[in-house]
Length: 290
Image (cartoon, rainbow, N blue to C red; front, side, top):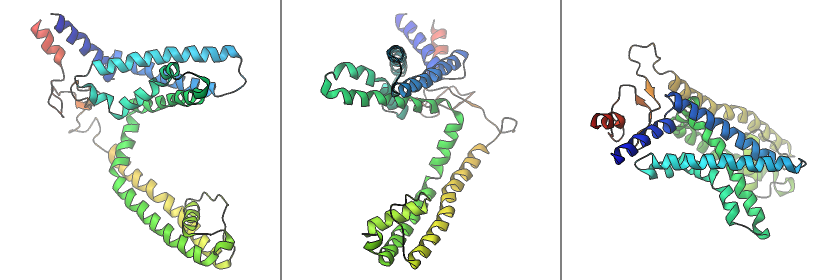
């Protein structure tokens, strides 16, 4: 009976923490989002000089309250999944750990010689802002679009690198050391800066031929910037152009996460995980046994 009760409350806690389709799950996510944003604001305000000491005290104690909440959240995420390593070593698991541990490390790393180290560790709390992407559906679509277009983008970047090497070598031969193009790597650096329309101005061509080549590179840069945007936009359009709720073959997926492997995006009518086959509703089995 005790093991049954333990499994029941773990199941309920898992539903609240990992799923956003229930009222409690939505409330938990909203509270978490607010605390993440408040924490990041606290980090930024702590770096501002000139506030009264009382303000910094409020920020410090407020950060401790938020850190303790995130500590319990992290522990709850670990104990409510059958394979904790699936979460601990996942992207969000690492982010959660990095954003929680710095304040505790400030107790261990004491002494005037490590104060700067502690300060840097505490700044790791800004990783909490990355937790926000977990709750944004559009961010997931953008991530998928970037992942689907990575091969095309890599080929394009390789092409840009070739252009930069060739153009940089030509500029090195045309301008020479007296114009600041002291080596081919420096010339390639200038070409990349010019292609991306950044234009630091630390190196500039002085000969008519060099300026003509630079003009062509600048014009080419405007076209090059648009290519990755077009590639990602096309993939994003494919992602968002899937079946709509009013389509005949549309299948709705929810945020239910598997307790075994952590996989999400299951169909509403699914009883088993699409990745590992684990039963998605163990609470039903527990109730039947009781």
